[in-house]
Image (cartoon, rainbow over all chains, first blue to last red; front, side, top):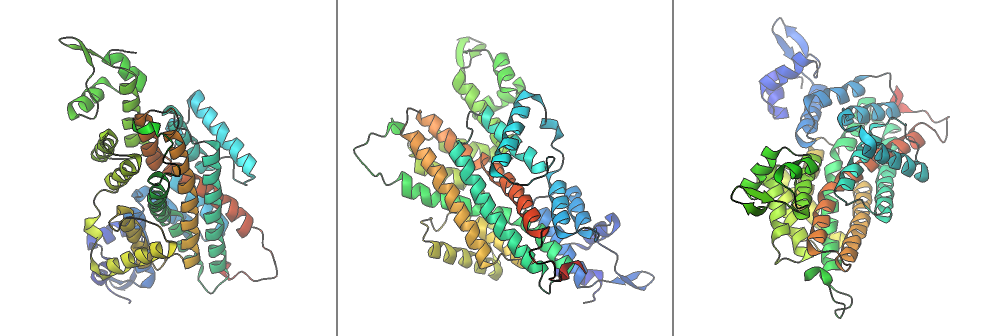
Amino acid sequence: LPVRISELGRRADLPIATIKYYLREGLLSPGRSTAATRAVYDEGHLRRLRLIRALSEAGGLSLAKVRAVLDAVDDSDLGLHETLGRSHYALAGDLESTAEGPGWRAARAEVDALLEELDWRVHHRAPARDQLARALLTLRQLDAVPTRETLYSYADAAHRVATQEIAALAALATSAASTIEVLHQAVIGTVLYEPVLLALRRLAEEHESDRQLTLRPDPATPNTSHD
Amino acid sequence: LPVRISELGRRADLPIATIKYYLREGLLSPGRSTAATRAVYDEGHLRRLRLIRALSEAGGLSLAKVRAVLDAVDDSDLGLHETLGRSHYALAGDLESTAEGPGWRAARAEVDALLEELDWRVHHRAPARDQLARALLTLRQLDAVPTRETLYSYADAAHRVATQEIAALAALATSAASTIEVLHQAVIGTVLYEPVLLALRRLAEEHESDRQLTLRPDPATPNTSHD
């Protein structure tokens, strides 16, 4: 590097047409012109392309959401906390359509009460409040609301991973890493650690299912679920 | 209940055409015939429709995956542990396309080593192993692999929620709940508790970001990330 667009495409494993599309859409900054119709691209372009690709493919984000997240990363006036916040808001998108009705308002009030009890400082309009309310409303309609104990165990687990993640981010921010590296890591952590957590939960479920559901502590106890 | 299909549609908040489609596809069992062209549907049909709708809309599953999950629920020969396992396998779908190359094999070996260390009993071909490997491979390509500490904190958090969830399921199985209720709860927990966990993680991230990144323990320390 620097390289021409064809080599950039090869290294990012993306078709040249896709890269040109990102350039036109302003998702990727222009290369350095070396002639009227030629430009070269550097390591920053490659890193950016890999991030776009990971957010859209592995993260499953629409290009509109990728753009909104990258806008937050690109806004150099924002500090790390604000960039994380903007990314979260961008990722959540628009939940307005479900945000109505008495069921919705009850679910949202439940979320607000939970956060109050947990003593988490979260903006009143944080989209994750609506995401949680929507998830709980769906479960209520299925008559499958998590017990208070389960909800608290989820909150506790979420708090543990978030504490560790933000600490890692803070450590990176005070290291020799560049601002853009820190912001990239913040966005990657928010979006692409989700599948890590979900896969580990499935694995742990299988382990616990095997441990708790196939070994019976007291074989004499009748199991009414298999009638 | 029992009710005609029009009333069933109203209660499930689904168009009649959709219900007829599910009937044709065998996702929903036929109603009880009351005349040559008439049938009535009961509480079980309504519960089934709500589950299908929640899995496809809130859970974001394709109808093929919904069907595979419901097939596991419908197979009354399976116990709870096996039903959970079949659901997990059905949900994971086909990851074959990414399961190649030395990078993939290294990521998969890393997952296997992690589970060995954690001493989790998980089938060698469990699809969640591949899901985790794929997520780690994506992160490696972005040079953003979680630290060992972060990965272990994730595993610990996942284990805590899984332990609580499976215990709740085991308690339900030994209660007066019917087999179908227990299986529904198992599937709902697997799929529809995911957004609960993810929303709580976002909320905890905002809280911890505010706590760790906006308050500096030592204001004299230069913060090299904001240069």
